[in-house]
Amino acid sequence: YYPILKAFIMSLHDYDFVNPPGKFVGLSNYKEIFSVGFFWKSWYNTFIFLILTLLIAFIPPIIQAIFLNEVKRFKRLFTTIYILPVIMPVSVFVILWKWIWNPDYGIANQVTKALGMGTFTWLSDPKLAKFCMVFPGILGGGVSVFIYLAAIQGIPKDIYEAASIDGASEWKKLIYITLPNIKFVTFIQFVFTIIGALQMMDLPFQMTSGGPANSTSTV
Image (tube, rainbow, N blue to C red; front, top):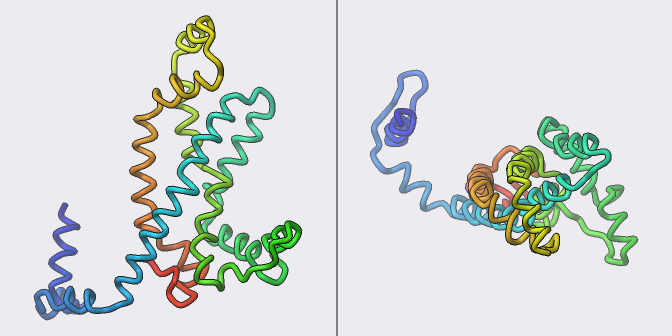
């Protein structure tokens, strides 16, 4: 709590790094930032990122963990694929996806063109830029996959065996056994997803520098 209090005290000053904390200005810093339209635009972008993240990147790790739990062959290969996005540095991740979204030679436009959807400018389009940053989350769940997988594997096998004896289908086992038994982990991951989305900074900064037209700038 000390850093939080210290940060608040700093915000009440025209901070001077040479002679901290500098001149006391009261709430003028808050008045200034609340009167700037760019600040509210950044809040709007942040909440859009949050909604897109929950819609696109929150559910796939659960589905991936369920399928990974059922895989009998090449399980180590798939687990390696899921963990790669986590161990990859953000800078490398950004370079890779900027190449994918490139309107001239990127794979994304090659796919949309093959599907008869035409081509797009992707990161240069204010309407698509946010989607382009959140979309990679649907391909690899990273550590979340392993957290869900551990929770699923922690469910007693006796419950599944009893359900099989009672004639429960695989779908009913999923709905009535698997998902209810991992709901606590799902809730924790839901909270962490919200925190991560609200703290998003490095990805938009490196991929678009907040552009185009401040459409990806975050708080």
